[in-house]
Length: 189
Image 1: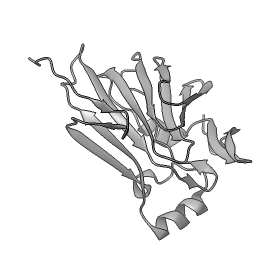
Image 2: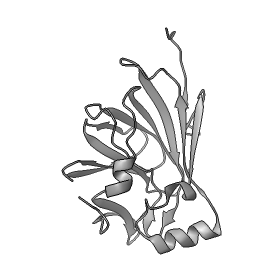
Image 3: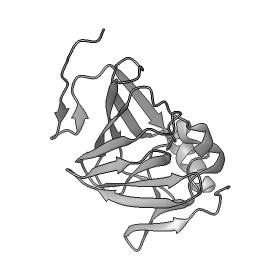
Image 4: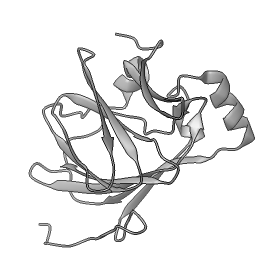
């Protein structure tokens, strides 16, 4: 049985202080995620830069347990498209998630399986409710690392495969110096 414990988010650095696992996602881990394939190939040839890291506190993946993690997305773009996470549905689709902006400027794009989308910008203190049945992907739209705290049912699971196959209907790109939502020409329904 799991005993009570505490961890801490450092709001100055934007990091989770006491974490058990760290996941790194470099450009090489995100092939096919960005829309601009030639720009991706060029960036990838120059270096295999870090796009984001996830710092997780481990709890059993049992019903009733709540997991939490801090994700840090670094500033950068592939072509005009901002650095972002892979994005996922939950394997247990009727589960929700909460995101709390910790540091930097970002956004979260969400979609349901019918293709309806929602985009919300995030900054420190922003609290976003990711509704059940909605895929979600976070984006760094600023010039410094963007970090957020995620709290979710430990048994929710991650379905990355659906997003890898169909993508998101909308993309977040920089146009005229600001984040702009455009249609994804590669979205498959």
